[in-house]
Image (tube, rainbow, N blue to C red; front, side, top):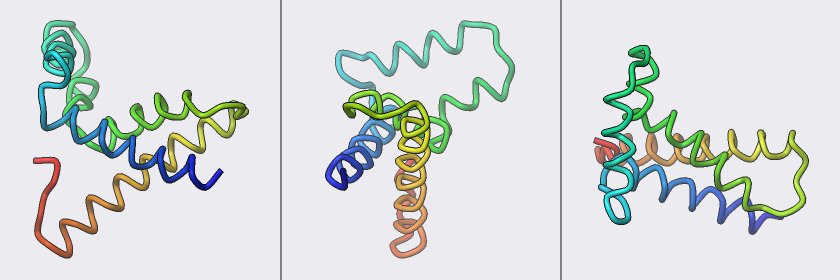
Length: 103
C-alpha cells in the first residue's frame, strides 16, 4: 500500500505540474483551459484552473481511481493526501530554494 501512496503522490505532482506549466500531450491541457475560459462560470471556478492546490486535488482524485480495491472513503483520503503531498513539496521548494514551481 505504501508503494501506491508514493507513486500516487508522484503521479499527482506530475499531473499538477504539467497542467499548470505545459500545454500537455497534444495540447490537451491548453484545450481544457481554453474551453474553461469560454464557458460561463463564477470567477472562483475559473481561478481554480490556475491554482495548483485545486488542480492537485482533482489530479489526486483521478490518480486514486487507478488504485485497485479502495473504498469510497479511501479514494477521498487518497486524493486529499496526494494533494497535500504536492502542496507540502511546493512550499518546501519555495522556502528552501526560492523556487516557485507553479509560476
